[in-house]
Length: 88
Image 1 (tube, one colour):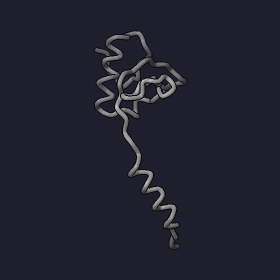
Image 2 (cartoon, helix red, strand yellow):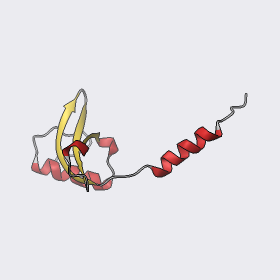
Image 3 (cartoon, one colour):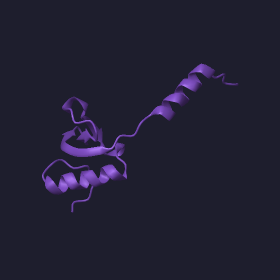
């Protein structure tokens, strides 16, 4: 059985991937535990308004974000922490 792809849909999806942006973390504002996961409240670089801050899981961070997570936990040792972040 041959799958027929819709070329418009394929081009749209490719365009979305190419135009997706990565944002840099300015600061980790806080962390909360929801069920079995830890959400980090992220203030993004060049987005100072609180309405632009978002909650992100550990999996959504890259190396630069990991540095901000470690810094946050050094300053807030009692804050909920993702299990993959070793205590320092």
